[in-house]
Image (cartoon, rainbow, N blue to C red):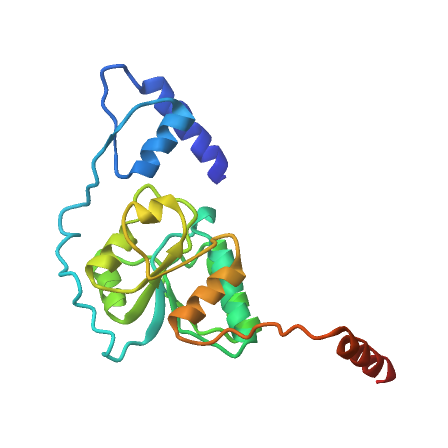
Length: 229
């Protein structure tokens, strides 16, 4: 359904675009994407709605008691990458790490159902608040220690900017659209739940257990022990 919608939007855009029109985009990444996919030139002008740029940078006090270790403000579209995020939280749980995570996807979406299945099967500490109004989102930021943002593609990534203005640590993919807006505290591969989980552990100062190589003799001895068992 999302793919069909995007195809219709591209068709609508091409058929209605006229030579004297000027296109404004919010980031260099979107400027490159527009040129590559549709062949149109554009002007980069980062803009936000009135009222979203009122927070003072650096006022997010990490010493305050906050309910959530991480928050991800987003809708439930596939490119928002909730499946990989949930897989990462399952990996953390398997290592005995259970960060509190706040999400904001529609309660009627398949992602909301997926969240509940992961919570049930892995005992994850996740709260889905559903769709929130702007003031409610700001309150959620205030009750969260860090923003995690695994989305694979954004036209601008407003939550990244909002978190930066609040002085929140940001964990995000190593992707162009992220660097267009902020300098994240930790980065990860958005396609790898393991990479996401490791970024979370780095941020929480939890040492990740590494595989310790063994010599050939010890390897054979352990194989023999396993066979005898």
